[in-house]
Amino acid sequence: MAPTQPKGRVLLAYSGGLDTSCILAWLIEQGYEVVCFMADVGQEEDFEAARKKALSVGALKFHLEDMKREFVEQLIYPAVQANCIYEGVYLLGTSLARPVIARGMISIAEKEGCDYVSHGCTGKGNDQVRFELAFYGLKPSIKVIAPWRIPEFYQRFPGRSSLLAYAAEKKIPVVQTASKPWSTDENLFHISYEAGILEDPNTTPPADMWKLTTDPLHAPAEPERLQIEFKTGLPVKVTTAAGQTYTDSVEIFLALNQLARKHGVGRIDIVENRFIGVKSRGCYESPAATILRRAHMDLEGLTLDRNVRALRDQFVTVHLSNILYNGYFFSPEREFVTSCLPASQRTVNGTVRLALYKGNVIVEGRFSDEKLYDEKESSMDELGGFEPTDTSGFIRIESIRLRKWGAANIQKGQAGTEPKDVYGTRV
Image 1 (cartoon, one colour):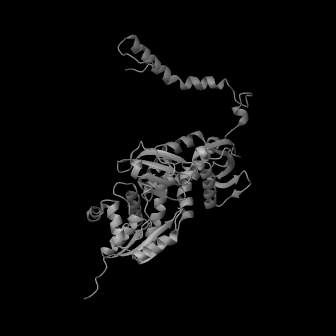
Image 2 (cartoon, helix red, strand yellow):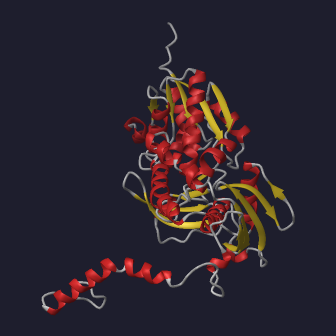
């Protein structure tokens, strides 16, 4: 009897955990050849153990790609320049890593002649959208296998116990994590925690959940000082109080991570709105990112033109944050929005001095050779070339429409037809 022809070759985004190990075995069971892919985006991971595990389960090959530099320079740094933030609190650590991983996957899929790519994202989360929109933006002809949206798969594996039973059947080694009932995603930028006991938004995260940062209550009693130099909105040099300096992009991020973790910087606990319309509770640690955002925003106050900053905040920051969160990185709108960044950051050059103390990033000073700030002109102790009488004309011009509006309100009020609240607003 002739051997059965494989259905095709699949590149699987592999984590080494229970879900993707079971997906690997299931895809092989369904008749596919499977190549496993892992991206090193700075997570603390035993990559060699993951490689051995994938091959032992039956993977044809295992690819590990070091993508840390690409992650920092092509995703994280533009997000810093744009002050990206989602719903005012989330610094987008997971969202930022997905385009890098997807690009790495498509590159290996093409080298390996894969017909399909596959992932272990759940059917309720954002990541399935982010990965698949990225796949199609990079390679429109690619086919995607999403097991957690295939009834045959999710009905067979309705919960963790069924996955554990399948792993035992297939002799897949599994590390029990019952003592930590939540899921995580980690990279150089951050770590996220969700699901399990965290699904109750009123449950306080246990102290041992937080992996990266020291509890701020137990952080050092003395602040640690450092300074960050920026050129065109990009961090180019970090100098610590001990005199250590870092200039390489990845080393800068690693150094800031180390300092921030020590001082409990970067923890948040939020409820966010997922792209698919479901609210989700998540806890995040973003140590270096929290420092960089604080320093960058402060330097912009000194060096960036008021109207340029307002336009960037209203347009680039908001739209790029949503584009990243929703998974539209490989899109024409993302290319358009990021093309605005260089012009907005041309004058963001200078140095910010900071202190890290018990979860806080405290700005202690800043300096720059850009000439937008004039100390004499701003002084309350001298005129500095500013003529106060000019302000009278400025106020008269600015008040023209307000005088007209106020007069109209008074006229209507005299007629006694429209009641108003204490602020004069018609009710």
